[in-house]
Image (tube, rainbow, N blue to C red; front, top):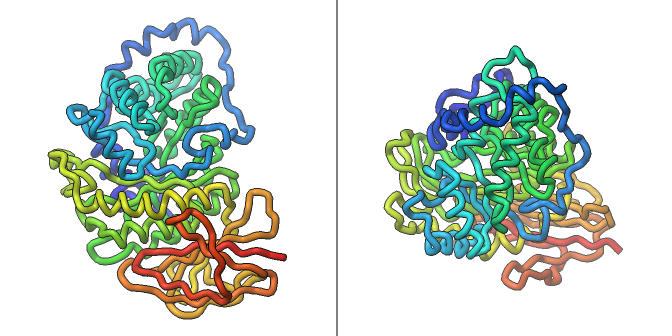
Length: 469
């Protein structure tokens, strides 16, 4: 995942994403080379003799029937899990105890043997797992090779052979209840979109109940908007995910909101959920977030419609990975840090319960009230039939409706500041006849008297349900 220097800007092409990307630094390049021999044994000559068969399915994804994106539980995941020598039941119990419910493999989990061990422990503690490269066969399929039936293409694998290779991996992992699918590609650039789309389609064809997930680089402006739209058109993903780490040594990344606005619009247009990675590690140019900054990243993302949150990173990458990685949720030698306890608290006490409320809802708007100057790419609050006015501190308002609109609205009021307490007085329009506030400690709503005053510690938020008639 990008460390910031790799952002796609308003006039940049995707190829300008820069050399320092999480894919290169953490997952390692060329991990799939060892799988090439196995790939070549899948009958490539026979496949080339057959006409190419399209596997692309443009029908809407069966989101409700898929792991993580479906069901009531809000996805809370981790990147960079415990390394092989720490892949133990105790370590996986720690992940689950912190309120995380899935992980993406990595951190030297280079083959099917350690992946199977991880899946076994995940089965025991109730976690879901997305297998990613450097799983050697997946890396060969999507990174080293291109999936194409063009006989002139270099370093290619035919669609038929790719289908066989995907089936081999499915046969390897489907015995585990925790297996949720594949992290097909992290931060693909435009030249890889066709291969990512082909791999995504093959997983859908062979295992429609699993998740073929990919994640995008961050960016801003018209160039990035075009990049995201091109990705969706080429890949037809079941979820739209990106990463951006906004807690900088010089203050908050002001372009974080614009990045989220672009992803939000694209996800709504495509009818797919949106996920985001949040910063939970210190490295070059970025601070180790405190508890308020974890809450801030989570709540700003929720206000912009996030349906999944992932921590980058869980385990601390060791110094050999470069970029000055320091303490994350767990140190390189396995000690739980204060940030682990902060993440556990926000996950258990807030994100789990409020995520269940927001996951099935549809984002209506994401606006900024009393935020002067207005951050680039954002929309200023304007009164509507539900929310008549917002006075006081700067807040970000996420308004939501049910999937089948019944006139009811939900309003998430998030503190715009990661450092200061906010107080905002919210008045409602004539359409609203009943206001309730969500209490995460009882996972239920309690009556609230309009207008409401939201007293928000740094990075915090409050959820209201607005009734009509």
